[in-house]
Amino acid sequence: MKLPQIERWRRLKQASWQTFIAQFQNLQLNQFATWPLTVKLCSWLLIFLLVFAIGFVLAIQPQHRALQQARLEERQLLQQFSEQYLQLQQLQQSRQGDQALQKKIQQLSAASLSASQMPALISRLQQAAKHSKVVLQDIQIEAEQVQPYFIEQPISLTVVGDYHALALFSTQLAALDDLMVIQDFVMQNDIVQSQHPRINTQFKLLSYRYIDAEQPTKTVAEQALSAHSDGAVHRQQTTEHLQ
Image (cartoon, rainbow, N blue to C red; front, top):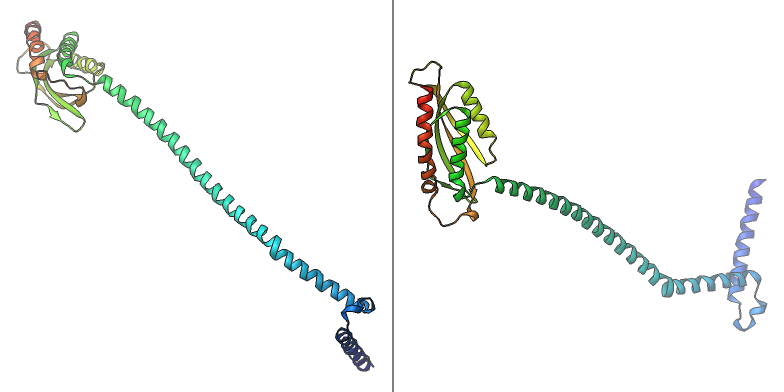
């Protein structure tokens, strides 16, 4: 019983579609009022779709493209802003590092010696030996070592004293404000016999000064010669006292 009903509906649908097509074929444009309602509705729908398509192409599509271009430019600007903000942070950190480095350089520059201050350093070494009660037997100012940005001035020292005096002398050297490095320690028993055991200590003292602070004056060895000769009397007196 269902098959006849389905067949009937199929034939009815086909007849309705054929009727609809026939109505379109028999339309007359000057008699719009006599058009069937279904044909009117379809015509209105087609006209609406056509107007919408034309409006989209002429008005909406350019604005849509402009909106997409604006969004693309927004993403690019945001990316540029992020990159520039990161560069700004890195620049601030770099400036802080440069300021810390500049401060450190100023401190080192203040602690470095100029050529005219070498005699004063020799005098401070003699005062440290005097306060420590060690014998400053020899001071030799060696040849300067020129580096790209500074000059290294080696000074060889030979001191004699007991363990406590040598420890105090090392403390006195460490307390100096000058930029110095102590290296090449050689310690051995003193040949001269005395009541208290004494140690003969040889080491090298390296002082530094910047090249741009150099002045075309006499050499460091010449400037320190007078200070070294003035300390000879003190070394002789201290040696006689310890003996």
